[in-house]
Image (cartoon, rainbow over all chains, first blue to last red):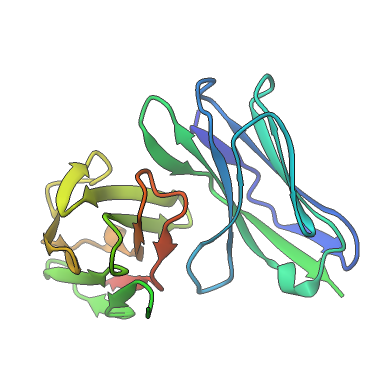
Length: 111
Length: 114
């Protein structure tokens, strides 16, 4: 089992709808999780960090962490075509003490 | 600041040749990371440095890969000899903090080994 897993998609969502991206992790001791956005041909860009159970909101983005179930999610409200990108989930794996990335989910927002 | 600068942006080389990728981190960042991204394996950490010293190289796939950081403003990742399976996008990133979640990534070097 990979340390951080994501459904690679593609995920297609109509403009204005909520896009929901999910990620699971294997190390129960992991504490910190991050979402990166990567446009095609570009480098990853950090968009959200979450360190404790519950929700964290930043504009149209909400990150959710559920440590009991070992999953992390990212919700994008009022999705826009400019949100079309690959979203990478990453966690600091306690045992390895380094940042481990999931495979990424390709998201397409349809006008 | 110009951000993390990588060169070259694209490299095509023949199997068996030596390849050197270069990175200039953001000034003042004490941590430097080398990542490799492929469709099959996603984004993988190869090695990272703190204050020019290699801290964790457990992600370096084979002895054919080596990385150096002779000073705070320059790092290289070398592959010798290169193989087709090394084809990937290689990213360099730098950060003020360890483990690098707030790291800034360079634009990457797309390596193709034929």
